[in-house]
Length: 143
Image (cartoon, rainbow, N blue to C red; front, side):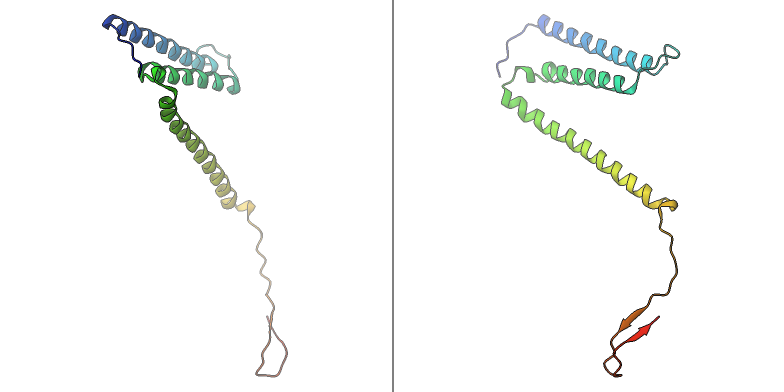
C-alpha cells in the first residue's frame, strides 16, 4: 500500500479527470448505439458484429479505469489486485455458463413441446410370451 500523500487540489483534479473521461466514453457508447441502430441518421445501420465489440471494449475500459483509480487497485501490489479481480472473473464465467446452459435447456424444451417433433403413436397389440410351469406348456402367447 504505497499511497502517495496528495493535496486536496490533486485529489479534485484526479476526480474531475476521471469524471470527464468516463463522461466522454459514455457519450461515445450512446452515440455508437444510436447511430449504429439508425436512430440519428436514417438508413445508417452498423452490423451487430461491429457494434457489440466496440461497446463491450468501451465498457471494459470504463470498468478498468474505475477499478484502477477509484478503487485504488492500480496502486496496490499485484497479489492484492489479483485476489479481488480473479473471483470477479469467475463470477463472470459462471454467469456466461449459466446463460449458455439455460439457452440449451430452452431449446430442448421447445423441441420436446413442439407437436411436429413428436413421434407418431401406432396402436398395435403387443405380443408377449411367458413360460407357465404349472400347465406343462412351454409357452403361452398373450396378445
